[in-house]
Every structure is written in structure tokens, then in C-alpha cells.
Image (cartoon, helix red, strand yellow):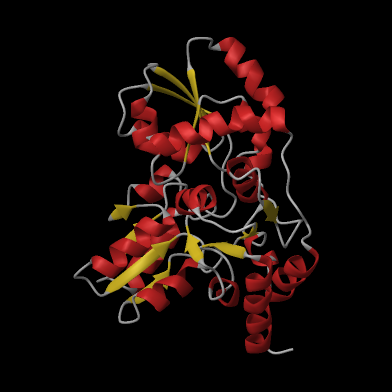
Length: 301
């Protein structure tokens, strides 16, 4: 079956199921094209909490679907690619976080949304890459246990007077982007503006013209007077940029910045999930209640 026929079948099934389709900016182009909302983690969290429908089809990775299930407990939340995980989210467990909390009893726990529901349940407040600085500065505690991304924690520390205690996790896609990639890209495109994600290493961030979440990068490209950009994040974002800002020239900082888990979702899996209403993601209520408080506190900020 060709792409157009599959997309049309999905749209019909979506109508029959009263479903909404959410897709992260790193999804493959044809999946982005059938989504009701394409965005970063914060945009998709808000959509999961506020949009109607009986079914949420989450085209992303496991923690994103869990977050949607926590925020919309009465809806069926589907993750078409059930094996699409986030390696960074797996770098910390609730048990490990409890040990750190015992060591620093006066600290607040700020957890990146790229975490499991169990870790969120042990946290005081969640954050995304777009609001991490605001979230950290919003809490009253002066000591912050920041999990699990050390690079995002170090970026936040640049803009906060609080003591940041970073967990030693990282995004395997962004952490592999090196200063030499920046030097090479700038040599090839000397007039281009360098935009990077805050999950990148500090030495890459030091060389950037702007640092922003995926949606922040897109907004910057579309509103800037400049015409050329080097994009320092996962390459899937380039499709949305081209769709929304077709006159701008954008180059990947690294062709190797590819999240294989984000690419596991395809149109066939989306269609099949709408047909069967599986795989369904659920979160035990006792965990969901605690995690929901941390997520809603973020959304309030």
C-alpha cells in the first residue's frame, strides 16, 4: 500500500475512533504529516492534557505515551511502536533516585520529562528542555537534584544561582555531537547561524549562536531575518522546518544525530494501532497520582 493510501486510511480510522494523533518533531516525515499536533515534549504534554477525543495515538517514545496516560487517565493512549524506548530515561530508576534523596533531604528533585512514570512519581516537579531554567528557578529550595540529563543540568546552572546536583545521564544522540562537528559545519557554511539543543555537551553549547528546544529552534528559524542555519539536534526536525519555513536553508550539524527509537514508528504501525486499539499504555494509579502532581506543577509554571 502506498503512502497516500495509508495516510487516508489512518485519517478515516482516526475519525471512527474519535482519536487524536500526537507526533514528536523527531518522527519520520510521513508520520509528522498525519499528526494533529507535531511538537516538542512540552507542546505534546499540553495537548495530551487539553485536547478532546477518546483515543490518543502517541508517535514518539515510551515516556511520552506514559505522560499522556498520566494526564488523560480516562483516554486510551496508544504507542504504535511498543519497543520505542528512550535510553536516557532508562539511565535512572526510582530506587536510585530515592537513595539520592536520602543523601540530600533538603534538595528539591527536578526531573526532565524524559523519565519513567516511577521517577516522575519520586520528583517534586518535571521540566522540559524549553522550560527547565524557569522550572528550576521557580522552586523555593536552593539545592536541586536534577535528573537524568547532566548536559541539560549544566545548561540550567548557567542561568540559576541554585546549587545544581546533576545525575550522570545523557541523550545518546545529542551527547555524540562534538566540537569538531561544529568546526566542520561552520567551515562549510560560514554565514549560517548555529542553533543547538540544550541536551548537547557544554563545549558544543559554548560555540552556539542560540540554544533552544526543538520547537524553539523551529520558531527561531521561521522568525529570523537570517536565511541559513546549522541545526544541532536530531535530524527529524528538518522536515518540520522545511514544511513551515520553506525558504530557509537548514543543514544538520551532524548527519549521525539520528534517534533510532524515534524512527520505529511508521504508518503501518499507526494504522494497526488504530484498528486494534493496541498497544495501550497504562500507568498504575498510585504511581500516576504522584507523577501527575509533578507534571501539573510544571504545567502551572
